[in-house]
Length: 137
Image 1: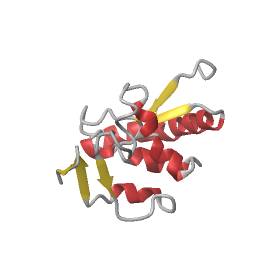
Image 2 (image 1 turned 90 degrees about the vertical axis):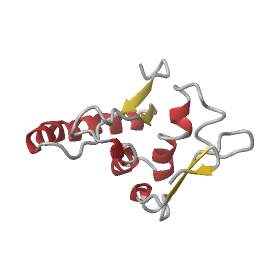
Image 3 (image 1 turned 45 degrees about the vertical axis):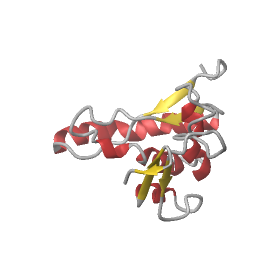
């Protein structure tokens, strides 16, 4: 899969829900993260995705935690950020207009408090979101 250019998706963050469900998933998370870390070290493209909203332990606010998860595995913070932006746009076939800041690209922006190069967790502190150049929150 690595040699064929397969893009791997990271969907492991958990939170909320009944404690027993959370514990069952959390027990697997470290092993799954280790696998993604090994894939990244081998040169695989790992993107952050979301199966958020499928149940109590997967609420909708987990997507950005993938950046923190990858950085914790040793992925350079800006590469971790690319995993949820420009790199993630490729398998969605929206690269060129999504996941980058450039003329003719959609103006979807997430404003964060902090320096993502120094602190990947800054992606969790979001004071503003812009969709097609219009502030939506």
